Length: 239
Image (tube, rainbow, N blue to C red; front, side, top):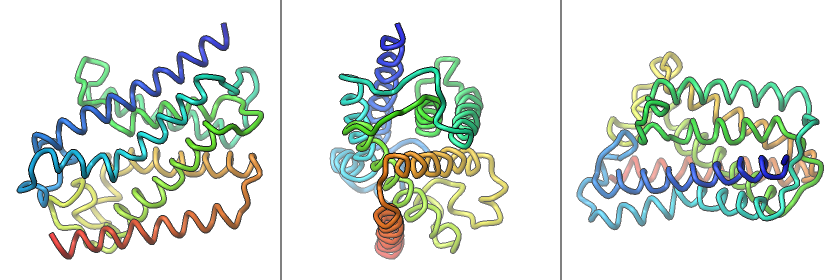
């Protein structure tokens, strides 16, 4: 019974990610939605979708792949927690995801309320509450992908230019375009921040538990932040 529940959790997590990929691709194809950048308005619709798949959505593909690998032979266990820190992160991320899902009317049938804050908040929040006695290929792929995604995409690409007040309006999510003063008083920023930073901390804890070296963890984090930041600078200065 427990193995069935674990596989159900993994299966739903994969389905939610695939749902996000489909919905975000539709928005980029149509040139609509809050995530669509205005500098892509003149691009052919299919080019927008390909660009999305090759950049932001590629992380989702790899995490879904890792979840599927784990689904085939799950090593996650019920009954024992990974530790107080991970348990606290899990509870906070789940609560945050439920609030965002409610406010975005996801639980009232609005499919476009299925956003990454909800998917990753629930998915990683539940994962942090489970016991993970050993590392596997699937879990390693999930953890490293999320680690690089938060470092390169959230911190490097979105956050650091926003802290420097570099993003013009229409180039990225609204709460990142109006400067730090607005950003740190905005509901949407804090919900994104809780999911991103909470999952980053949890992933680092698990990577260390699985004996990955501090050198590689630190190197990949710094490297991904630098790469993400310079990609953002290139987009800001050229479009």
